Image 1 (cartoon, rainbow, N blue to C red):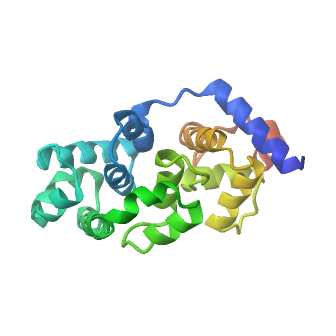
Image 2: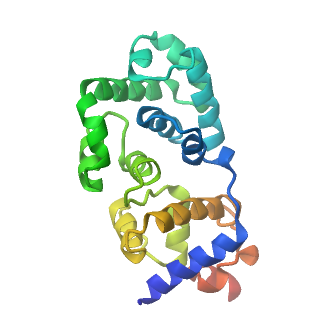
Image 3: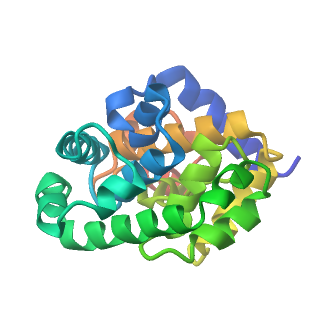
Length: 234
């Protein structure tokens, strides 16, 4: 096992012992518990782009209420733009998000025969199909693949990228795909471990390994961390 593999496994072990993520802090976890449809799940993830998960959940619930608790491609497409924008305004960027939601609704309506097939397709095939939709990027697709479909993927957000870069697990110039495939390889595409690490790295990035003024001296990973080693040497 390489040094990076050892580090990732140890990181997972330590973070598991420290954090107990709350459902309301994570759109994906919250929606999974509610057993929403694939379309509803993707709507929730789209609403979480570039905003907090709490705001995204507020927007999701407001949108569902506006649509009479029937959040479907048809209800999105049959609702005036202004009403959609007002319902999700708490998540910010309402006009852009509505455009993405409409594109997603059209895709689901036009490809209804594909929806069930997504469950038997490989991750790369699913990614290729959904990334043709406006507003659906690699992170959104990977959250859906990993969390909803239970297939191997590793979504990378700003917190995860920051923590992994500081640890030295991946180089600073690493692309999204490089980081994602590196972690998937280290964890042997184990979906359970990928889910756990994804959430725990976000939690750690939010609480301790912050973008500005990280709390390195409180960090359980400091002895594993290249960035933390610099702090310790000061």
